Image (cartoon, rainbow, N blue to C red; front, side, top):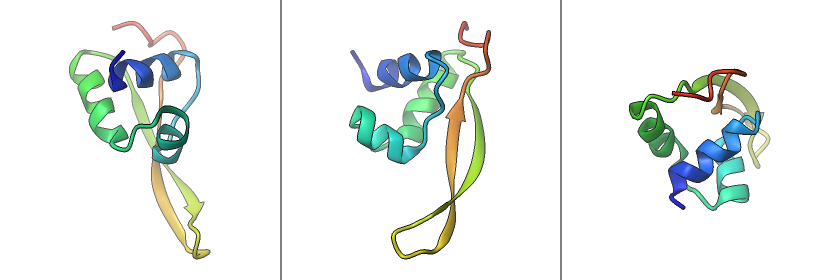
Length: 74
C-alpha cells in the first residue's frame, strides 16, 4: 500500500487529516504531496486552514484536508 492509498483510506472513512495526524497515525511526513497526487488522480479533496497552538504557545495555521460525503469517488 502506498502513502497516498493510506491517506485516501483515512479520508474515505469521513475523517479529516492534518499534517500532525498524518505523521502520528500514518507515518507520513509530506501530507500535502500525497494529497496533490490524489487530486491529480481526480479525487475531490478539500482543504481548510485551522488555527492551532504550537509547543511554544504561539498561534499558527495548518491545513486540514477532508472529503465531502459522496465525493469519495473520482
